[in-house]
Image 1 (cartoon, helix red, strand yellow):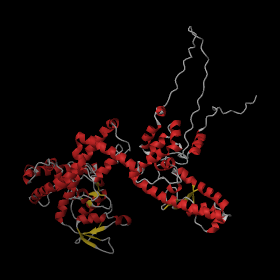
Image 2 (tube, rainbow, N blue to C red):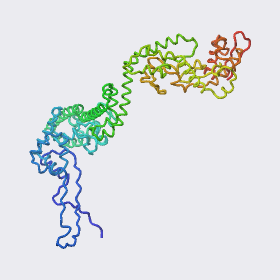
Image 3 (tube, helix red, strand yellow):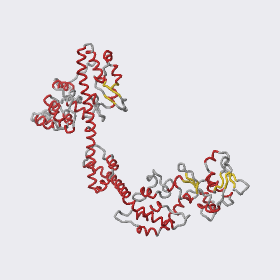
Image 4 (tube, rainbow, N blue to C red):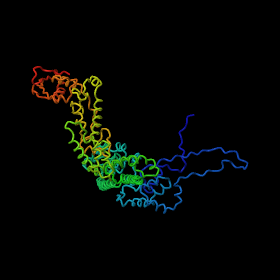
Length: 604
């Protein structure tokens, strides 16, 4: 037997949610425009009665009490007391109460309860909330202004309301429900378009002065509003009296809507959801700061700059718009202490930069200047930045703020300057030796250090730099000693309270702490240097760079056709030989001593 149609089982006389809203609206049109969630239908289950007991009573005879919600007892409170309480609530709270249960919805949505909504809206009079417009009921107005849910799908939305359209739409609904002015005019009757009356004067509109990700700039209309307007125009266009009456009422109502929409937009900007969220975030931030002050960070909090305060406010644990609770603080305390330790170090460094280092670094400069003047002209010495970051000097420079630092404070360290210079040189030499190939070290038969040979050359390939140099020039190479203007500790971390300020004041950085990876042993440069040393009549395996400088030999380049380069030193000849221009030429550069009759061709 084929199954028959299913029968809807609903208790007789019980209205649906939609029917309940309609019934309320016919009494007093206070609906908020949202469809309440349909209630789950109760299922009645029947059980067989158990066998009577000895007392003649069924074990199932006791009926359980029906469970009630937490707000069910509100029905026992007198209405005037409820009305007094509800009138003091925020309008959005009253709206949420009207959806809590059937009793509250029936009570608050009745005509006699209109004063409750008006009194609730009056609590925001100090914030200059625009009055409820005549085309909206109080619940509709409250929902539009304070509830961030889509008018069409009830989904969440964080966008501002489209006040001229009297809706608050999510991105998806807005994209599919609005049409441009051109499309809207195409839906209107031809007779109306012939009148030349602008559509913007008789239809609610959305003005977009700037384009966004969804809509272009211009005027937009709700398609449903345009279709309803088109149906109305069809009825009144052929009756001149009706048409003029319609225009008179329509022009006035649209003008009022536009004026009120402008007021709503201004109020939303000044006192809307963003302001409430900001207030909650300020409370949370201040509560966290109070906790940190009690833990001993009061001095750090007072010294935080505007940038530090913005960084603190944007911290993932501070930014959420939720009031701080004891449980939240217990979970986040360790992370906030770690953050404040970094902030404390930053504030201390800023204090030293502004008040302490400008007084102590000039003393260091004066002491080291006297030492430099007492040394030889060609001695290899550490720079001021190298001395500054030695532990012995940092102990004086980074002494506590209450300790007065004078020239006499450096007296013990000045006595050890020769020793500190020797230690620095040895460390630098070891760092440079690590760049040498094993073959170069093993083939050295000179009594001199392999670094001192004229054929031991290094190249720097940092950016546009392509210099080839000996080790002594490498120790003062600008790429390794000068502080770039963009440098902010990109290299290894330097010791001290404020290393950046020290480098900035001394106009340099410790040698080898930055871009040393761009330095390498120059195989090509060493080959060219070997042939030039041979041209000068010296043994390239034993001749040092200092001996070549004292020889002061001069060479002429015969490969330059347009401009003859003559009288070059051996260092200049090596740099010229590895110039990138020779890489593109088929013939390598040719050199000759001014007093020699034969040429030497350098082939790498």
